[in-house]
Length: 311
Length: 275
Image (cartoon, rainbow over all chains, first blue to last red; front, top):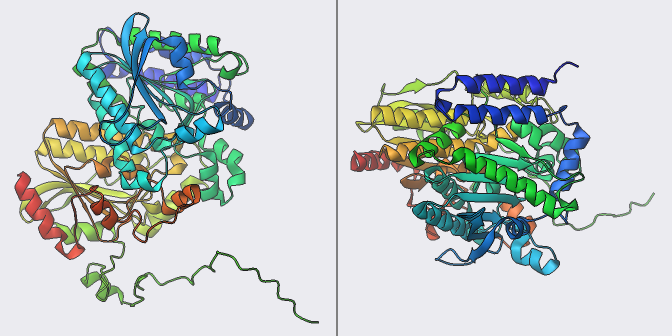
């Protein structure tokens, strides 16, 4: 069977990576092996229907949320509250815990299960105060040398009146700027919806992962359909056009790896989904261990600065 | 046959008749091209700031003959083969034809009132000033050029946000430009940002709000989500100046609002303070 176009492009990326001076030295074999494994995992390019299925699974009401993974992956979890200025945003959680014996900081958006929780957590749409809380805890982690794990699950940043008055745009920018300065290993994983600015605010990481059925996009399918087709009902068409699925994000170099999910999706088996996520996080941490902080930061910036397609 | 009135009262007002670009949307004064140009595209009657093209903006700010453009030939590609009602490549070609620009940002070196600086100026006429790979790359190169020549960076924004047609890669221009700014900060070079109408979405949520000094033009909309989105989701009544420069100043989000005719001298003063 002839390799798919996607596979060829990934191979090309692999080839380019081999020649990149920034990946030179001892770590290069790790990088290449990781990509090679991803390549092996990829089958055919997802069809439009498969892309839409990921959109549906990413938003599945029973999908495990950030705290479901925290519960299964971290020991001694201690949640930290508040931005030390104005509020404690329930749409963003932050805290410390032990991952396989070492202290880590974890930040992530949190959706609610019932109507009460959903309102309180605003469907995982953070206010500027939420990003301020995440920044505070990431800086804490930096001071104490704790790796930062970020779980991304948001339709986007909250588009409210107070959010705008309190600087939603600058909060998202500032949070990314904090991440671009960290000298500790950082791992982000999109575990559901990676919605636009609200997602990237906590995803400027050394390793960016996506679960198999997560989505990561510049705008929601409905929003894109509304603007370009003038009809939110064309969301499926929009999703097929901008390709928010994990395989395409990997192909474009936007993420570093895909975290497999239990057959049928993460919501089918929380324990297995957590185990698979834990494996990927451990692997990424092992990769990053021992790289000096300023080198981590240099590579992190270089990686994001390489993203884009132009002539 | 009797005519039956079936009209239903709705909140939807009929779309206003298309306005001439030289008619002030605020006080309806109308101007000839040369009048507007002489007034730096500011309404002489009410002070409304019309959109200003990137090259005209640069010409109005820099010392004569000092501007040298960089990376002018960078062009967008179509990584997704994006097709909505029309192919992205067609939209790009059309924008290039109508604006004479290769994308929505012009960068280069120049001097303002004798102080050398790097400039990165956006142009809303090119696909709504949307940020795709080229804008991200040009802005990042402007940061590098600032560092290399040890001069401050002056950034003028006007953008609807990230360019949807480039999908997730458009979103990645946020961290990309921010990584470049962090390099600029490490090199202790200053960045002064001027936000023109409108500066929203992904540009507001990345380089526009990370300047050492944040200025805005009067009336400029500077919100992450557009007023319509906020209104629809929250059902809240929005104030007249929702998301505008004036409100942002009141809430402590920017340092100053500067009228266009004072922008050159203001930038000159600031650049001397950072020199």
